[in-house]
Amino acid sequence: MNIKPIRSEKDYRAALRRIDELIVKDPKEGTDAFDELDLISTLVESYENVHYQIEAPDAVSAIRYIMEEKGLTQKDLVKHFNGSKGLVSSVLSGKRELSKSVIKALHEELGIPYEILMA
Image (cartoon, rainbow, N blue to C red; front, side, top):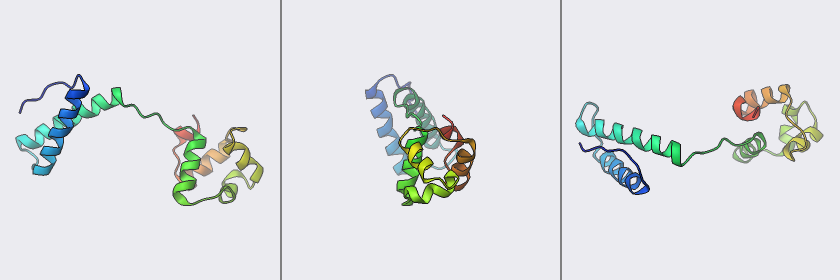
């Protein structure tokens, strides 16, 4: 096992190739290959957290994503927006903020995390 830090894109790509090689072998827990896979995966995750950060979506983007995924229309959201078609339209166009009751409903009914809805 020859593990070294990932300091460059070249190192990163080499680590990904090694992960692929190890996954194909399907190493059993407790083996050197399993430990190597675990260590390299941790290094890759750390590198990605620094170099490939993914920003959380804003509330409107998250709502639109869920609408698309679940095949919902603005009309389908009215019940979560206190029965107001206008409020749905205003929020989705960015003209109004979400109220606490709407945040709670969207979280409970559609599973959108509070952290995203309140950001």
